[in-house]
Image (cartoon, rainbow, N blue to C red; front, side, top):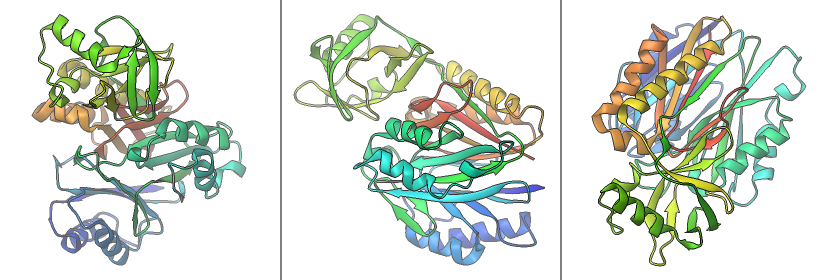
Length: 388
């Protein structure tokens, strides 16, 4: 049997927020401490104090999470919240792993995380999933997902996202117990005799011809088709009648992101700023040699994509009844859509029915599952549904 509680607090002070969360969890999950807690908290909180207070008041056997860029549950959406998923189960088995100094060595980071996993030696009928939260500002999130896939021999599906800081892109943290850590990643291993459903979707399509990435390094996109990267965006703005201010580019970039051709769709990347040499800083790596398109979308397309992702996640439960869901979407999506972002959450609710959900806006999304468009994404709706 599995039980869950989805709770939130808008109390602005960390200890009061933790007390509020603890009272709600005790009311919804009486009879003992949670086996696992997942915490999404606004960067406005004193996060170490918040985590220490939650540990003291809730006594979870395992706790992990991340700072966020907008938080939500089935009941509430906003900024400046702390949202928590508490789980107790006789069917699900949990463990938590952490990797530090992520920017130095992703292979070592993947090994550190996987060293906590019990599923590598579990019976073959066990379904293996890991909720992965990473400091995306440390970079190399795509490589981390690849390395996790290698070190686990492809036996796990992965879901999650990059920690946020309300789109300031200055300092993000993941939570490991009572620690709030930068340049790190954490993972909650979930072993189950029933499948967990994952669904992925975005509503973007190419708005122009493909361009070759002729130079890039880390998060910096230097040139496209041998020309400074900014020129591609300037030409696109002129061709489509849009305003593009290189000193204040975010309003343009939120509606004109990049899509990397993969052969199975486009993996999205959000440009963030323009450098003096004409290069463009992005929220995630754009590899040299890739073919990219400037992409376009509508709010309706984003809502439909979230709905499709939820449908797919429920379908991937293979007939099992949903217990609770996790939802991640990009902070860029929330900023672009404004109040209309609530329609994405409404679409999620319509597909889930009475099933509660919890999640946050992230700096990138993680999804790797059979039949899904896998890897590290931007501006993509990612849904994970746990079985009852």
